[in-house]
Image 1 (spheres, each protein chain N blue to C red):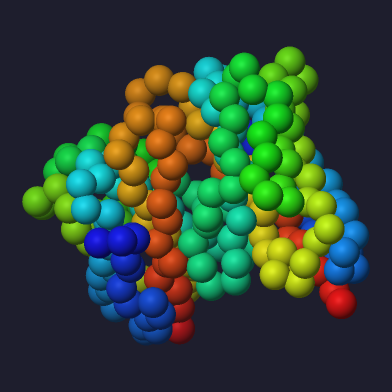
Image 2: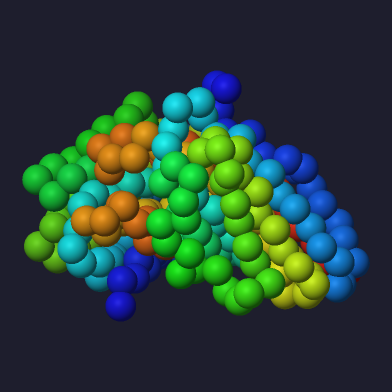
Length: 114
Length: 113
């Protein structure tokens, strides 16, 4: 597609529920990143995919968070047993993989855990 | 520890005025530095990117500078417009591996008429 698409744009869920956030990267971009942005803060790294594999998942805060990219394009960020502290904007970005190329960010999914 | 610090945290200016945003970083090894503009409810959009050897880069009314010796960068906005109201985020790429991005917390700029 023309840009990085994230769905849903907003998600309100109850504490303890399971949520899935979806990211459709730019077609052909091999690198995909997930970030979490709390109010008034810069994005915080969660996980990086190169192709289908998670090359760096060191930013995932705990084992309630998991992400997949089974076919090397669309990625899903999964959060189990959500907590109020998980409330944030979850951003996805994709790139062609080298530092001289720009990263393109999606508009994010605003997750609110009540 | 790799860190990017920005100042001021927030800024209010009148339409038509200029302003300068600051970024200090302690990132090693350094690959490049980018400035992003993030409108409310949107993802960040790249304004400029500078490598180690570049001192200045312009994009319309935005001019970024980089001093790799002091590890400082600035973003200068000329003749501000109401549409410049946004958060401006300084991002440094760590060299090697997969180009990990280190984000600053951003400067929230409000341009008033």
